[in-house]
Image (tube, rainbow, N blue to C red; front, side, top):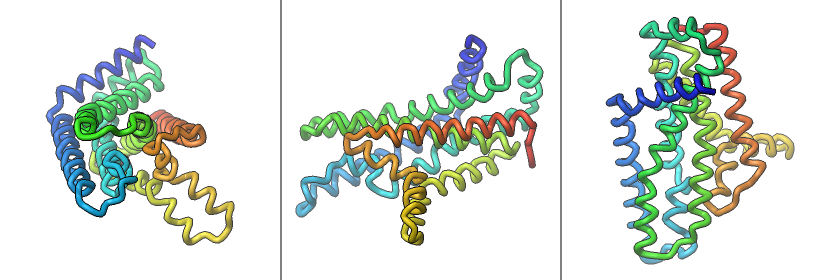
Length: 248
């Protein structure tokens, strides 16, 4: 456990000392701030149903939210293994007295913690909402919990794709491609006639499993989905990293 903590600290240090990390943070805050501004302006317009809340729109209520979750985690994770292999430091890791799972989990945990860190400033938006109204705190809290669970999957996918190649851009595009599948697979329900097939596609859909969280509902089935899918991609990373599959 001590070795895992040391490696995780090393990875986190890179995030907070890297200009790329701060560019990612700045871009994230600009986009989320602009979305919050748009949603508050929209909901202050006449004729908008009172049942629609700015927090419901902000947390998964539009496709813009999912585009953000498609791009940011992939950017966070694209360097995890790719950069190590490109600079040659991967050999140092492989010959150091640490286990493979220490290396993989430390990179995953560091990326995941940075992902969560990005969302901390958005609490300011929640405070602004409280200044002008009295929203129910339950859905807001559960929405953040949902983001934390969704992040497990998205960061694990990015960790896996980074283990497949030494090229960061390739790792980034592969992560986006896989994440895109899980974000859009629910659309295929309309093209399937069998009820079992529809149920499988619905369960595999990340947005479908996330949708209850902004409503204040923490679905255990969805929690199992997020955790299981994250562990699947961590396991695939272990297989890929263990076999040294780094391609151009």
